[in-house]
Length: 350
Ligand code: ASP
Image (cartoon, rainbow, N blue to C red; front, side, top):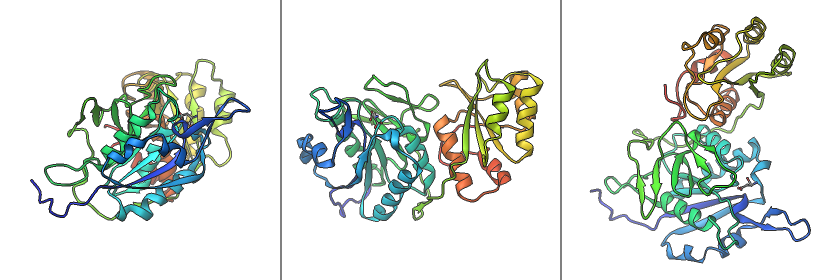
C-alpha cells in the first residue's frame, strides 16, 4: 500500500463543449439546442455528494458535436495542457455524434498523458426525466478521481469514453447506436472498465505509463486527408477524381472484409499512380470488427502491392486522426508511413 498521508480531495476539471447532455428544446423550432453549463449542473444536485473540488470551463457557445472541427480539438487539448498540473483528472462533456473522433484526436495530441481524460455525454438531455446524462456524468467524475489503491497513481492514464455500462479506450471507440443508452463500443479491444453496482476496472486493458514525462500538447493537425469508401459501384472515374483531390496528402481507404478491393487493373493502377505521387494510402476495413489481413486474399494482396499500408484493426476515427496528427507534425510521407506500422497510444493491435 502506498502512503496516502498527502491526501487531498480529488480535483477535477469539467470541460463542457455541448452535446445532447446539456441541450434544451427550442420552443420555436421544437429542436434540441445546446444550453449553458449552469443549466446542466443544476440538474445534477447529487454532484455535491461527491467530495471533490470540481471546476469547469465551457465552450462559448456550447456546440452540437456535429459542428466539431480540429480547431475545437485544439481548444480542448490546450485547456487540458494549461490546467494539467492543477487537476487530478479531466471530464469532457461532448455530443455523441463526433465523440469518437475527438477521443481519437486527443489521444494523439496529448503525448505522455498520465492522468484521466474521460469523455462522456448522453442520449437524452439532462433535464429529461429518463436522462442517462446524470449517471454518465457522475460515473465519469468518479473514474476521473479514481487512484490505484496499490500505488496511488491515476487509475486511468489515457483518453477514454465513458458511456452507460462501459469505459472504452477513446481511440478504439465508435458510436454504434443513435438510440441505445450503450451508444459506444470498441469492437477490437476489451472495455477498460465495466460499470454495474461498482466500477470494475480491467487492469490488463488499461494503458500504463511506466516512465511519466511532462505532458506535451500537439496542436498541429493536417486536414488534407480524405476517406474513400469502396463499393461495388465505384468507377475508375470516381476513384481517380477522389484521389486527384487538390492538396490531398493521405487517404483512408475503406475496403471490404480483411482489406479487399476489386482486382480490376484500373483499380490497382489508380492506387499505384496516387502512391507514386506521394499520397499515403491506409487500408482500413469497413467491418466493425476484425482486421486488415493483406496477404489473405488475392484482392487484398493486389492492394498492398500497389503500395497501400495495412491499418490492421484501427477504427476509421483513429485512422483519420492519426494521419492528421502525423502530417500535422510536419513529417514527410515516408516518415508517416513508418509511423503507421506501429501503434502510438494503443490505437491498434499488430
Ligand atoms: N447531435 C448531438 C451531438 O453530437 C447528439 C448527442 O449529443 O448525442 O452533439
